[in-house]
Amino acid sequence: MLKVLFPLLLIFSLFYWLFIELKNFLFQHQIFLKSTKLNCFLISVGNITAGGTGKTPIVMFLARKLLDKEKEVAVIARGYKKKGSGFLVSNKREILMEAKEAGDEANLLAKSLKGIPVLAGRDRKRLAKIALNNFKVDTIILDDGFHCRYLKKNLEIVVIDATSPFSNGKLLPAGLLREPLFSLKRADCFWLNNVNLADEERLNDLKKFLNRTNPKVRIIESFYEPVSLIDPSGKISELSTISEKEVWLFAGIGNPSTFENLAKNLGAKIKGKSFFPDHYWYKRKDIERLLEEEFQILLTTEKDLVRLKDIPFSKSILALRIKVKVKNEDFINSL
Image (cartoon, rainbow, N blue to C red; front, side, top):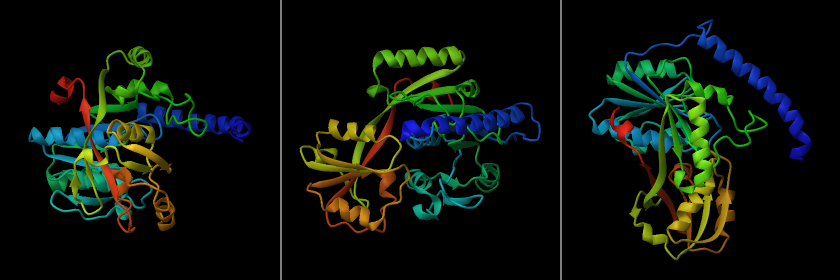
């Protein structure tokens, strides 16, 4: 079926390319569309593909690093599929909106980043001004900001999944590219994620391509390291809890293979797996179907756990907590 539809998808990709190129041209020459300079240091963490590169854990990593350096930081998320121009998810001290209101990623950021205000919505310019006026921040991190050109960035980070950098190299909807690869010239830093899972030869080829595309850009390499397990009540467990246990994996994330690899490396016996679309909001019947399977532990991700708050479980469910490990931190420490 996909082969039959692919020529039609390519036609839609052509129209999408024309739209993106026109928009970028207008921003580049400040014709009708203009970028605003903020009175703070603005870091954008984005990607050139649709989902699955691991932006959110990287935003958390950067925010904590900057907080440790006594920076006054705010995080602005896109608020995936949420209506409205923007809203305050947390005010440093308390979480003001749950996942259903703010979106899963924004809610997870708010829960994970104590002492940092988190805002979410489509109007990032307005939200940035709210952060500046109400929290006196000197640094703002823009989650999923590569395509937001209404703000001038001091640091443009593009996150790339080293295991599948650009999908099939086609623009949406024929592929997963959100912009032509030529747009990578706008980046100040390429952040290669999941490098531990990438073939070494392909990883070197990717670095060579990026160096040819944008020779002045710094390249950072990172991977995920499991930290602990957490249940819906917030109770923390050791990673050894799932070792040698029969585990059923389920997740609604962009790249579930990374999650599966982490579970295997922890010694879990994968009894089965159920993967859903990214940002999927689970229904009671989805979980009831899962609970019919034979296993000892249901294992999911922290991002999924915030979408499961109102669903009861009759079997043990745990979420894997991870952190980003960076191979070359010199550039990060210089921020």
